Length: 415
Image (tube, rainbow, N blue to C red):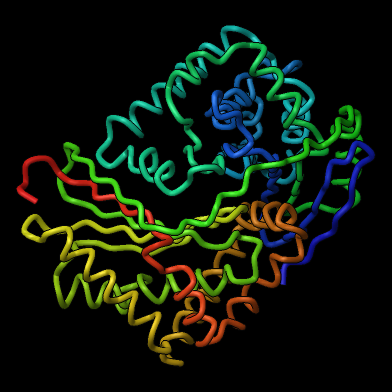
């Protein structure tokens, strides 16, 4: 059980405090309720661009990293289609440095043409290196628009195309910051060797003076139900053929989510999982195969992906997947098999709670999903999944009419 306190500043910044005396560290984690789904379709990649811009100096502080390194701290950030998350970890006695740095960049970034140009170049280079010039790098640039036709999940966090970042103007950047980077749209979690009163005083000193701006209202288009299979085949200069099958599923907030996550574990978690035993070990149709849920805050995807040996036809490999899915749809999973999966989930959730940074991030995400107390309900929600739940959800989700399939072929290997 993770204990925490919660309060809200007058400018509507939500603050969560988790005391952990077992560590000499303190973590200051700020989650902004903005991701790639909040972008304009003609101006994508902005949430991720901001992840970089936020380290380019703020109104009173020229360098973000330097003061933090001086006090023995470190920091990083990540962007998804749903959120942008920033975190600093420092020795607990130096926590005020993190408050000073984080509050100043929430107050206002130092918007300079130079900073924009530098970070724009970094993001463009990342787009090329990670998505265009890396084997299998463009998979999600292909699979997202195949699976989504309406919802903004149809583009990746890096953006839809490089030109959107190339064409980003200072006006575009400032308006994106003003709309999304404000106290009402943020959740601050302070975790580690800290005291509640100490955190309250630091919040009043550093964050309370930041002006309150109304939280932006999100009104995203709903993705229509997929009613027929979608398929795409591409050839690339890669070492092995791959297949990706993406099925629409519920959102991270829905009660069915934990059942579908368990299904992914039954199929591919560990060497005793179904897809590994059947398709890699016995039939040797794949050299690697995975099933996983994306964990999206809006209705998301259940994905099966795998690489095949050169001599295997893609149709045969896909038939192997199909046969395994038919089994989980038509036959009840064994009670022992389900319990084994639940035990693995429980141990991984429990293990993650030993790390102060992971706890801080998960508290912030839980709060955004509805309430920070959800962090303490994960294990019981997985434990409540029944054999019948699994069969029901498998039939609802793992339907070929609900699936977008990508054949990602290696050039010139005869398939």
